[in-house]
Length: 562
Ligand SMILES: *[C@@H]1O[C@H](CO)[C@@H](O)[C@H](O)[C@H]1NC(C)=O
Ligand SMILES: *[C@@H]1O[C@H](CO)[C@@H](O)[C@H](O)[C@H]1NC(C)=O
Ligand SMILES: *[C@@H]1O[C@H](CO)[C@@H](O)[C@H](O)[C@H]1NC(C)=O
Ligand SMILES: *[C@@H]1O[C@H](CO)[C@@H](O)[C@H](O)[C@H]1NC(C)=O
Ligand SMILES: *[C@@H]1O[C@H](CO)[C@@H](O)[C@H](O)[C@H]1NC(C)=O
Ligand SMILES: *[C@@H]1O[C@H](CO)[C@@H](O)[C@H](O)[C@H]1NC(C)=O
Ligand SMILES: *[C@@H]1O[C@H](CO)[C@@H](O)[C@H](O)[C@H]1NC(C)=O
Ligand SMILES: *[C@@H]1O[C@H](CO)[C@@H](O)[C@H](O)[C@H]1NC(C)=O
Ligand SMILES: [Cu+2]
Image (tube, rainbow, N blue to C red; front, side, top):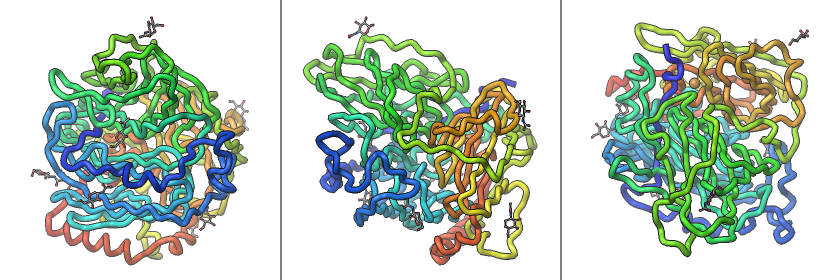
């Protein structure tokens, strides 16, 4: 069996405006503080807070509320020139970017304008400090919002940097329900201009729903293409993302891998990248020619326009070690220096090694150093693959994750009579601020991008072709800290975090097919304190509307629930 065929993906998105373009950035930019980095010229930008602030403990409170209204729509679009059905946010893929300043409160009203799908919107990497209810995971923190319903998410931007939002209902995100989140804050290196979000995705010419049965029975289909910020060419159609540089200036790009299945290496011909953040964690800057992004990961990079003015390829290259793509070497955009006529570049790509590894851990040094402490809870989990009635199911400790849309765990924790099945894969954390180590192991030759909700984690260990022995091999001294890391092929990933956030938090593989096929577990963290953070009426109302809709339409849940 070809294991690498099991990953697979699609996802998508483009900046292409399918219906109505709204200049979100313009609308809100005047509210943003105009100081994007800590430098001699802007030392006081963030008041008593700075790059040195440990924002797990404290964050500014600006008192500003950023309120957004988003609408999910169903349309036909051709991001790469090929028409297909696309589900999107406000008619564009990626949807509108959410902007905030560090310390703001973000309120987003999401209207489900789809006829035939529920929804929930997850704010990826947002810590949701004491706001579990705003995490947006169907079957975990809410029932799906039924067609015609509006759900409001409210959270504090205690972190800053680059992240994204995406549907956490079935494979809806990979049909286009995604967008960027930019939280202005200090940066570890200076730049002149912010070019914003750059979404990297694989792209199918059919919906993810229509490919799911095939992905589950004969292995993941090969995405025919990929998109950069929602656009690319395919055969004779489509168009490329074009980004304009002015010679001598430094630009910040906010890279996001929002794929179904592809791990990407991103690069710009002839230009090096200065990496300043991994996920929402500022790091000591390092330079590289290519940067690797597992699904769900983000890197903020600064590029200096220091080459001969001309046109240069920007490349997003799917890594074939852990996946496939039908257009591997032609997922490209153009960097155009303004004095030069726009044309297809003739530049050559940097050399790279095809692999599905994380960036070298020794390069990912958090600017604010945090050491891990000795764990009071250590869980070792085995990832496996089984076949049930001809369909692939992933397992953790032999259980394929299953949670019911109509009975989210966050509602169950308030019911003293609730019982939990083994396949709800629950890890209970009762103590406050205890260190927890989760070790995820796999004997299969396929890497998985593992994402944890409600926390960043420290990468304590990450080894391919190895078996976890005990914690004596782990690195506890300021390890890389982020919210997605690769579980290497036939190896293990050991992550550590502190139980500092009451709630029900999902951990899962971010390959779309695998999430649906049950590669997930959930934490019930400090159960007795959860009630005080939740509005149970809102939770119940969403569930009632869902149950009414699901019953009337005989909706069948055919996936893990997340
Ligand atoms: C997280 O929430 C708790 C409870 O409201 C609060 O005490 C703490 O200060 C918050 N943390 C941050 C970084 O805002
Ligand atoms: C999205 O669309 C809704 C409904 O048309 C509109 O009210 C809202 O302003 C749009 N939001 C953004 C961020 O563009
Ligand atoms: C989108 O529209 C198509 C065509 O009308 C329909 O078949 C499909 O069910 C719709 N999808 C959703 C999620 O509403
Ligand atoms: C979501 O809508 C798609 C059509 O757009 C459909 O194929 C799929 O079954 C729907 N999923 C659910 C769970 O309703
Ligand atoms: C990518 O698309 C988003 C959403 O439309 C936009 O905010 C951002 O500026 C675009 N990025 C680039 C580099 O054009
Ligand atoms: C890019 O770099 C290559 C290798 O160093 C060099 O041969 C080429 O001339 C450069 N291209 C441009 C347009 O500067
Ligand atoms: C956590 O507390 C619950 C309820 O008191 C108890 O049933 C459970 O055994 C505890 N779990 C752990 C890991 O201590
Ligand atoms: C931990 O594992 C190492 C082998 O990697 C072994 O030498 C050592 O004895 C083990 N320590 C404990 C406490 O089991
Ligand atoms: Cu996976």
